[in-house]
Length: 92
Image (cartoon, rainbow, N blue to C red; front, side, top):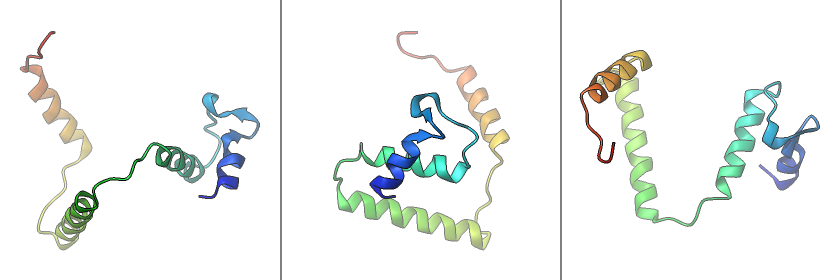
């Protein structure tokens, strides 16, 4: 995204950015969010970046080929809640 696009989106239809504007298409809001997040990124370890990319590629191939099955979000939430229900947290 170019700086001109960021500036254009920085006030969504005249509404200050901090107030948000849900009438904008999700793609526009996502592009703005990604652009803003990039301003926080610092140069990282290329080895780590490459390892993450390789892991993501491998997992995509595993899902696409049917070797692994995904779990519905509702099931993930149920499992996490069940796990946390019996957990104790330091300082709590």
